[in-house]
Length: 73
Image (tube, rainbow, N blue to C red):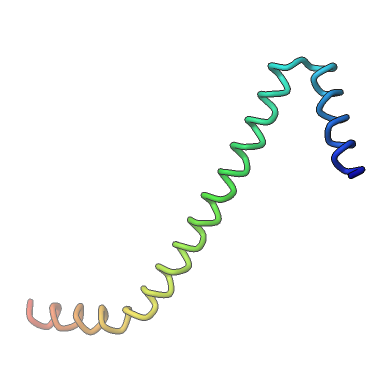
């Protein structure tokens, strides 16, 4: 319960100091930062998955590349 009072007090003080518009911009900025961190996390997971898949498929690719190189000679 005390946490709710502290949060409400901080928001009221922010509005009193910077105004409603600037406080809303600050919350929009925080929202964008959280969304950007989520996108970066998803990109990291996709990169890791692709790297693992490439490592698994590398022997097949090398074999195919060697066959194509031998056929061109």
